Length: 200
View 1 (cartoon, rainbow, N blue to C red):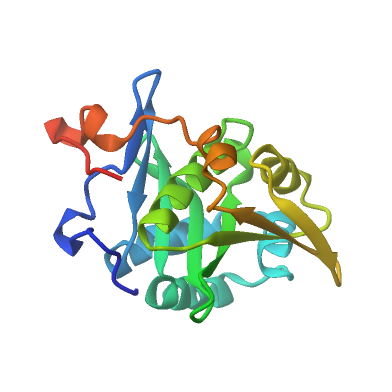
View 2: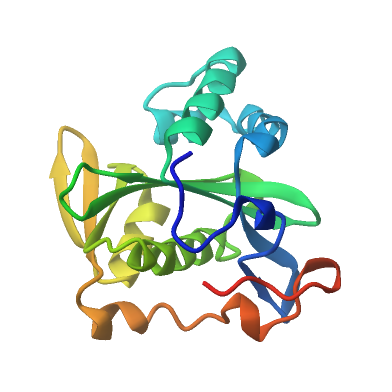
């Protein structure tokens, strides 16, 4: 995985975000050490979710390889946990030197409608700003209405091409973005196991 500015690998086990009102939720940066958890999460996805995220109902074996590829190549990979179990993933990829980053999100069916996708998106945008990104493209299939609503909530410009939506979130327009980033940063909250969280 590409290096992330200001984030030490030794700190990967510290929560990036948590919420006192939903104390069982936290977001963590993932690396190859969490491969078994990522593979187990992907194997739990139903056929519809696999199609929406990967374009086809991939087999468990194919998803195992996908997990390795993502952990090795993503600029940033975040996981949202509930009750110490991985419930959703976000991958962030840099697109050359353009200042644009591509973002992919998947949340397991049983954990939807709890705001997990929004929290992952909010945290990733803060991280993308720290990595000097000017915009983030959220990619999702045309029938993925939860992702479409999420993109609309953050003021993304949405384009449709060959059955896939590309929602561009302009990070330079701080007044638009910051309305949706009013979440506690980790240093304002108690961390996991009594440790303070890491500043976003």
